[in-house]
Length: 95
Image 1 (cartoon, rainbow, N blue to C red):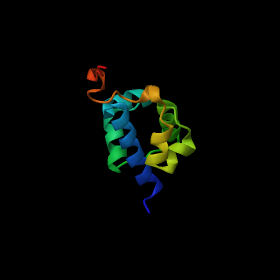
Image 2 (image 1 turned 90 degrees about the vertical axis):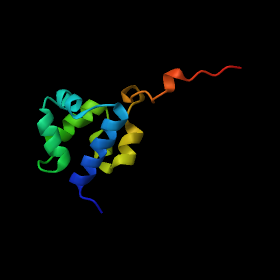
Image 3 (image 1 turned 120 degrees about the horizontal axis):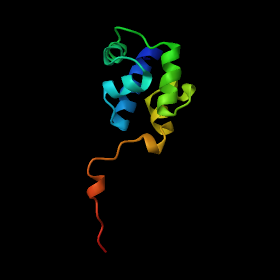
């Protein structure tokens, strides 16, 4: 069973992917440097409780749901925060 820290790193990676964010984007949203995000995501630095509160606010996901794991966090991510699916804008259905 992965640790809470490992689960949070996986969850943040999944949320970044779904929102189309890069580490620099997340860093700006959390008022951290890209280097700090990189260190937290690689495991050389830890996510603090303040970071978790800020992640919760940034993604619009309650803290508890953010910490449960990837599946729950993805389910709770507001639709407005999701990046458009590649090619979705080009989809045209003709009768």
